[in-house]
Image 1 (cartoon, rainbow, N blue to C red):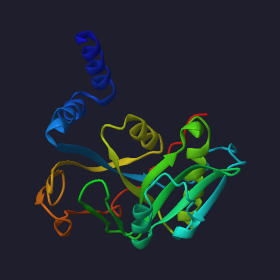
Image 2: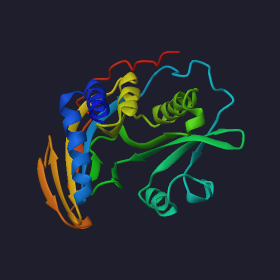
Image 3: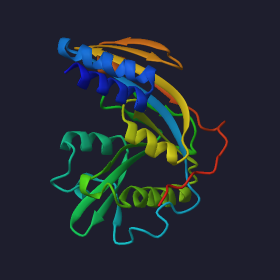
Image 4: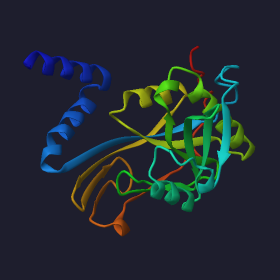
Length: 239
């Protein structure tokens, strides 16, 4: 038992680093007493000028959906969550392989009202959008679905004069962190949210820095400005 715990600890430290691993295990320790801990990184990803899939995945059909009627009945997100996203002005790209939904990603101009914690993310520059809930079905995760989604998103956003997509990533999600890093992300800020019942305490590396709230109307607002960022060349993913 002790050997297994030690091995898990070493694995998490190796993947996350000491700092994030400490928060990860703290979060696990707090769950039994009803306290939830979330640690996020906020990143900006440049719109790629070149195709990322490099010709792969042509059989995957990527569709733009702007209203709830375009979402299939077996969509892997609650209907009320999807409805709220469209009400915020979000739109989604869906990847289809034949009759099967292979994946999707969501985009929103101006910013995003987070649905995991109580927070409102705003964008100060018109040259950026917010991306969130990038999902690929398990059976398609070894294929080009992820890259095909981003190729279509990049084409659409270039036409709208967008230079950056911004997002929040869980510090504990190694796969997501690595996937975004390979697309050339720039870190903008970080935050820790501690939630206990209706009470939420937010520790943020930018304004408002420290925030206490106990209702939706008191959500902290984080503003991200991509205008000062240079436009680095986006890295392509390996074959």
